[in-house]
Length: 317
Ligand SMILES: NC(=O)c1ccc[n+]([C@@H]2O[C@H](COP(=O)([O-])OP(=O)(O)OC[C@H]3O[C@@H](n4cnc5c(N)ncnc54)[C@H](O)[C@@H]3O)[C@@H](O)[C@H]2O)c1
Image 1 (spheres, helix red, strand yellow):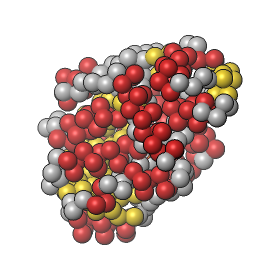
Image 2 (cartoon, protein in one colour):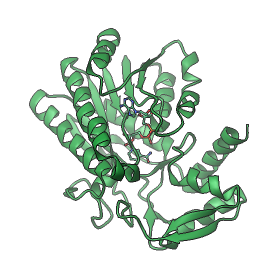
Image 3 (cartoon, rainbow, N blue to C red):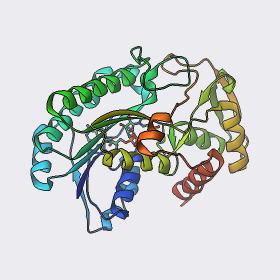
């Protein structure tokens, strides 16, 4: 079986690549190594995979249909994990058209190729951000029609297209809404890295509302990968699933835990919550539990310790 992983050199994508290789699959990662963050980081993410005989890296842009056509013709994948995207919500506020190109139009190319190549399954990465500021806990039956950022809106648009491709062309599709994923290889623009970057050099960290009343449902990357693998192989013809930890923690408590794990002390600079950020994220995961057997295993203290171990190695070597 051949798996095509878009964004395969990124944070979540590279973990999926490793997991699929470990399961005995052939894996093609397709990534354009853009410089939203240091592309050298992405190269390191897939350094081990590159030594694997069942791994192929294709450097290409998902907006480039002819490059995608050539890769599909050559590798004939049976499964697609579509993780490639512009992934930062705040950056999207200043770059909405880029997000539309990458997260909407290019997603259509991937869906179209899934149709043309009659793949056995495709997962489309979405986000808890689609819920905007709806009351929590969030479940998949909520309307999700008031996204707070261009990022969230483009992901929601991709979800709708995924449904239409399933409905019209029978593409077996699962939309996965990830909740604040963290762990080794975590993106440098996300909270754990941003905080530790500053804490280790005695710089203040920006804490929205002083971290009070702001909750995030941190989900460890290995748990997300287990959910993706299950969703790729389920028989459900179309489904939308929350993949979260279902255990939100207040941001100030998160900082205290990070201090405990790293041994650094945070200097806190309080700012108002940006308009693109919801005050609370909280996944109801009963659908994913029932239909995918999704049961997140990793407590925050265990996952953050793994993140910290990786971070030290990454930055101090
Ligand atoms: N990390 C999270 O907490 C989180 C939460 C919700 C949803 N997601 C979604 O999960 C997916 C993976 O996110 P991540 O955190 O690993 O981000 P990431 O930025 O580390 O990975 C995305 C990868 O896609 C690649 N990419 C971007 N544009 C591309 C293009 N035009 N052509 C080819 N490749 C391109 C990037 O180079 C990168 O390697 C994204 O779809 C993101 O929206 C992530």
